[in-house]
Image 1 (tube, rainbow, N blue to C red):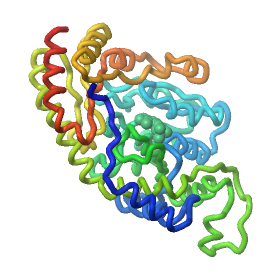
Image 2 (image 1 turned 90 degrees about the vertical axis):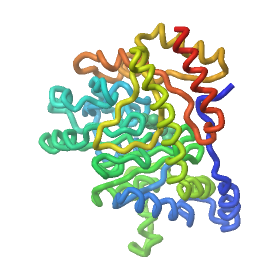
Image 3 (image 1 turned 180 degrees about the vertical axis):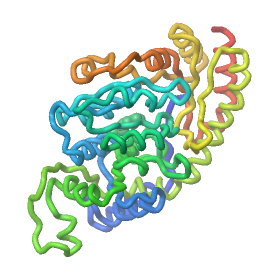
Length: 376
Ligand SMILES: *Cc1c(COP(=O)(O)O)cnc(C)c1O
């Protein structure tokens, strides 16, 4: 069976872990964490980048930084992973779900303004498949209404919007290094802050609400409890693993893009025959080949396609159950307007295997997909 995902290892992870072991510094914020922070700052030009346990915890930090209060509202897509909503629900805030665009499957910026109420505090965008939302329009709306913008850039490392790295355009950005993403550490993530006002407090929130980081830099003479916080920082073993991956990020991205391009060229014929729709990447975006998906005509055809692929030894998978229709989403959130695109595409979307190393089997996957589409 060709799996949907297979974590790629560069070959250097274990030797860097051995170095971390040798350093004898195993808790967080040691030399490897600093190396990862430096890499992130170079790569994204964010003024502050902090490793976290996951993108989920980076989003939770973002919600804490915004000082959300119970009943405050956060506008977001429904077509996303649960953490986009959960991070804010944990603060008592209400996710307000808005439909996505039919082309990019990203939050439809034209629907945001009508969903704003006196309780709206923030917009949380999600860059699906590593392809950017219409950030200029979204930042303009946020500016006009005094709202914060959080980017769930879990899938967006190495992607850009108008030459700006994803996660650095809004006030706060959250990245994921989960093993299903492009650059990995098993579980892992990072919070990017554009504004120094958030950066300073983020450091404190991440260190259990203490000014420990300032103490170690000699900026205060004792360290103490100064704010709310939790433990959001990963240990050095995780950072060492991640460091090996970050060093290989350009090569990993190039190899993924080559696979994505192979799929996209192959899929053109099927799009012409009308059986599928291919992903759409707007001109002002470069993407990181996080995912190759196709849209089939309806849910039944998609199920048959997935079944056909399975019989041919290839794992193809669907994606999110929309949050507005999930039990916890119904309980904690509110839907604004209809969800025509969200409902339709979540029924019709299928993802094909995409991982570094798939190159040697890509022809097999394409032949299986040809046969699976032809026998629908
Ligand atoms: C993967 C993902 C997350 C969660 O990332 P973790 O690092 O596993 O917490 C959140 N949002 C989106 C859009 C994701 O794809």
